[in-house]
Length: 260
Image (tube, rainbow, N blue to C red; front, side):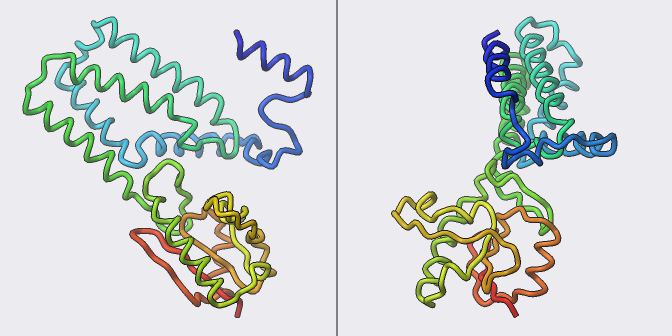
């Protein structure tokens, strides 16, 4: 009721809800056709098992096979399952129609509710102790190793939903230090989101310099596999901007490239 009331008031006062045509994120809300809907359903399925979450689905399926559906005779299990289904349906309806709203973070209520459902079944019902330990170990291992999932180039990844991004900040600082040592003017360097904001916004060091958005007009480019860029920009960089310095840590890297 509060949400509906606020949304109605916001609509009357501002004339829009959620986004408007002049929003910097407006393109994310562009409607998709039937093919786009089918594509988004596939992306939703990917999001549900991504970064090791496939482990919990395997655990759930094993529990269902072992219990043969008896778990749904319990009121608490039915309630948790209903909450999961309602959240999945509501969020899906609100995402599948748009071009790019299927970020992992928006599905957190679904992840949490399904995890609670699976944990409830695992710890409430009589299950062989060895099997329980195996399932718990597998579940934890899948989630932990999921932070090592890094996809190939040209495959967008939800970096804000995995610990795999942590080394980025150290190699980013190394790249900035290299630019300073080489006395390369920041005005000649272009980059991509999220590396196009003021340095202070990330490092909290009072440095208000920032890299310009890439438009193929700069002398240098900073590129990292943390940046989800278009295939066209990626191909252009590989073709026209040879790497002059690289920094790597774990599965992440940053390239400093110079125009031919």
